[in-house]
Length: 477
Ligand code: BYC
Ligand code: FE
Ligand code: FE
Image 1 (cartoon, protein in one colour):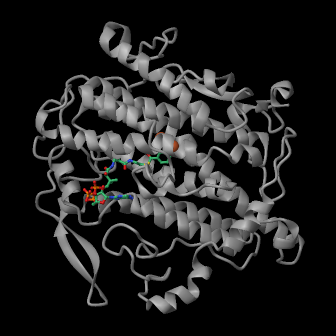
Image 2 (image 1 turned 135 degrees about the horizontal axis):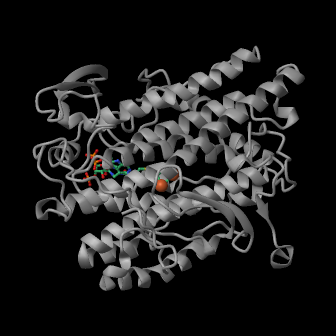
Image 3 (image 1 turned 90 degrees about the vertical axis):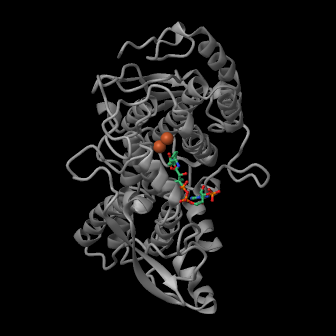
């Protein structure tokens, strides 16, 4: 393992040329993927030279190669983390048995569903982000957007590989459908809620990569524990790419906070007249994208989650570590809040049924850590404002609090009272329009739009004024 065939039509480290049937099937999906990319991928930049990293090996540290590429020429491939000898299932009912190198018949339906759900999010996010290049605040940010986009494309390849190799004809049909559904389309939408929401400005993009890609990190980490070895190894490698997406989101929002603070200090608290992002609008964006991302963890009390765990398909975050001393999870319970006759009550439910919530709680902790850092920037600038995460009851569309009028503090309001303050909690049309008005395209190397601070350093040790993208003006004209 570790041997990467880069010269093949589909770069891979799974010895694809040793399985002609699979290779042919994937090679016939490839042109459809490219058609989809040309149609639904980044609009207006397909002929430009972008400074991108490409996966060339799965070994630690040595996998990334940086160079200029035109996006349609990106080497999307199939990369699995190296196999572990004699790996065994380390949680659930079959603990201690060897991991599966095929899909067990009685877990087929569930695994297919998990893989399809995961796979569907990847192209969805590319579709959501396709127009952002036109108003990128710098070449540095433009390049990061496209890096995220090509890697989400590769994540689709990762799931399509699993469908093609392990699920026969229905897997191939599912792979085709991945290129048919469209984010936000009424007739054929993407599967999960957050992946049908528009991302029309860079503040939304940074919130998405901060909060929604972070759900991806936790879902992938849970799948990286799987007893289905190919899924575990595929998602392990995806996680190495995911880290950059989270970096883009977290530092993007940090730079917005930084810049708004600077403008407030310069202009006596006023940012709007000076083209900055007001902190109350930022807070509303956080409220929106954080709550939409909590929905992605599914129901707090879930029999699906219990059976995924029991069957060894999906573990907890870092299941195979000292975080937990019981990997059966048959005995413990977990406390879950629910609404009963208009009041919040706390119930204990069997631990296995709470696995979506256990995973989500790890995610929430991670988000809180970032909030603390942004708030430190506010304090350091003597700005009297603190950003916060809304209550997990606020603005929910899945789970036990779905559809209920809670405010950000988690208090249940009457529908009228909620409607009356809604515009203080979530972005209004006017907020969106204002943010859009700030989105000007900046193409001079080393220059940044007025609403965002420069990053601390460039990509791959390049200077900030590096040409992170080179445009072919002839093609553009
Ligand atoms: N929207 O028992 P439950 C990423 C449905 S992000 C719509 O909790 P389950 C990325 C659910 O299907 C990570 N429907 O279900 C990020 C079920 O339907 P049925 C993506 C929803 O299956 C940025 C019902 O509600 N990966 O990679 O335990 C850029 C009851 O719920 C939603 C995964 O999600 C929703 N939000 O939990 C690019 C991993 N939530 O059976 C990429 C794979 C729930 O009643 N997915 N429902 O018809 C899973 O593990 C699970 O399917 C879920 C849902 C955690 C999503
Ligand atoms: Fe992804
Ligand atoms: Fe991602």
